[in-house]
Image (tube, rainbow, N blue to C red; front, side, top):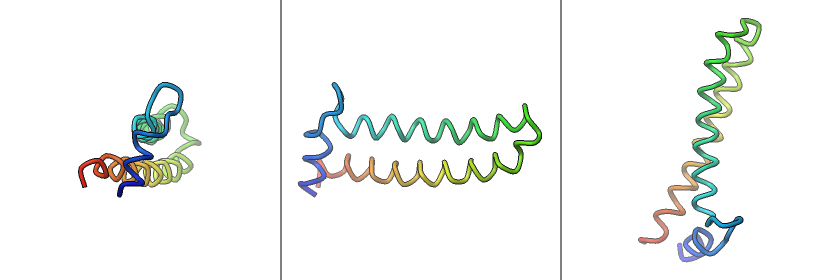
Amino acid sequence: MRTLADWAYGVQVGQLPLIAVVGFATYGLFALAALAMIARRWNRSFTRLAFKLHRWLAYAGFLLATFHLLLGLSLYV
């Protein structure tokens, strides 16, 4: 767990630590998953693709959120 804690706050991406970047990326993936389902209202031919895209964006967001959680908990364990 010490390695994850070192990554979380030791690795800088620009001005931000890695844990912040992963958190923003997770938020972005969940927002894109929601946008995929909203966008199908605007374009009916996008309906089938929107569901598949929504599902895979949500899977990727869940994996990234799990990594974000591990990075956060590694500081306390």
